[in-house]
Length: 136
Image 1 (cartoon, rainbow, N blue to C red):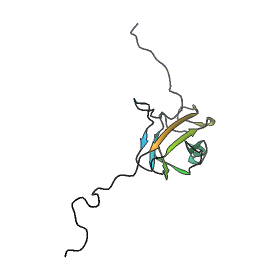
Image 2 (image 1 turned 45 degrees about the vertical axis):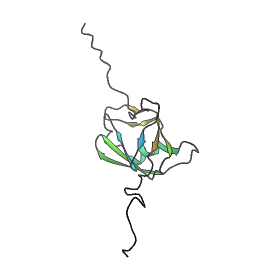
Image 3 (image 1 turned 120 degrees about the vertical axis):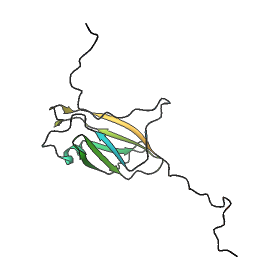
Image 4 (image 1 turned 60 degrees about the vertical axis):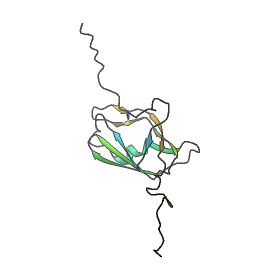
């Protein structure tokens, strides 16, 4: 034997990034996140149907967060949401046997916890050796 193992097609799920080596969840810095579609989608799949299988909530209170889903390429979706700075969120994917990838595999459940980045600090701090008033 060659020691090679064949496993077949990967299941239809979103391959979310996991926590970093310190156990901290991923941090997003923008109001959009890419979702990779490993095998694409069936030609007749509507984004509204796919979006209905996704839900986003704040992790602490479970408060729902509205989002928009767009398809930018055959293998990429973009999730747009108005994240609040320094807030933890949970994106949940519900299994849906009616949603099929390009090879006819049904969508499996998944979940990811992530955080939004804090707002960037001032580029130039007030009073850092500069005068902002009118010249005397």
